[in-house]
Image (cartoon, rainbow, N blue to C red; front, side):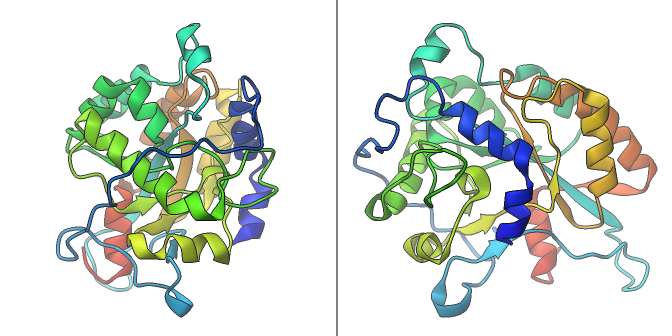
Length: 290
């Protein structure tokens, strides 16, 4: 699983670059404010995975590899597009200077094409763009999941990202949920994506009490800092298999061609017989539930 993450060089570059500016205390994590508890999901409503060995936080990478022809299901080939809305704890000055960490044209395109999607959002992003966070969260076409508050790494040596201290891991995650609540996001999902995709058993143990399912991916789009939309499109189309989770970004300054890629990828995957679903639907299918 770690090897998959370490091959995702484009994604990793995003994490490093997002923290490259304005980090005078680059090795230190700001002390979280008092945090709200992570939501308690209703098992009948929100699919999650059972805890892993020794009670560790479970990790989800992709859904069932089926096209529905052998098992008689009606689901067909499914794929989940996921978008990381990244913003680190210390990028306020860059946002104030005009840098855009949001991407309204991308969200508008997903709506126009009627593509369900899961947005992994940092708490800092929700604070910067509360109206957008609320709009996405209240749209049944989307679901919002947790990408940490600060976008600081939960392991050492994670592509240059500052790290969250072990004692602060849970409160950093919970602080993001508190930011979602303040922005008016209803019912964020009990799913968590590690910044940079980096995790180890220590991080999985520290988050186990929150009840979240960690969500990785099996297709790296390569949209981070890409300028060639055709190349990113080919990478996605070459990588998708039934049940795939594709990682992309909802950050205009760091992923400027993503909206163009979506306009190319969606009709082609539909032509190939794929149906777009949210991560929750893939996890439900993995659990034997639609």
